[in-house]
Image (cartoon, rainbow, N blue to C red; front, side, top):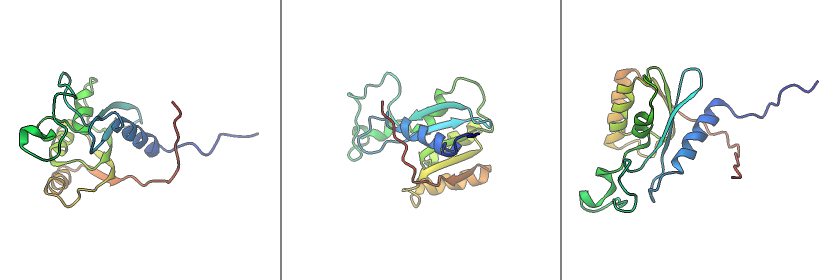
Length: 161
């Protein structure tokens, strides 16, 4: 009797993999972030990545990080978490978990809290000491949203598509 295979990926590996794969859809030349929202029974509810709203051309809006406000991406691009929340068409996200490749900023924290998402699993926190992330943590803590950093396993997951 052989039994089941033991080298299958964990739920965290699976959903963080989906978030990272979603981020690969982003056209942003500097930062690609993906998000995956999951129900309490481990069903994918929605996904998103950072980019411009539907109908706003990736070729006509700016991708620059620096410069005048209307010549940079910041007034135009939507973050992956907000896109994942807005992409969901199934009703309430109350009690859901979001996997995201970068710790949420203050604006995304507001949307996560308002949507009723209760847990954040993040990969990178490279902006941990910025005002946006400090404000984010403060709001998430006040609202009782749990968050923890994804623990990378070092496992190589290869896709041949």
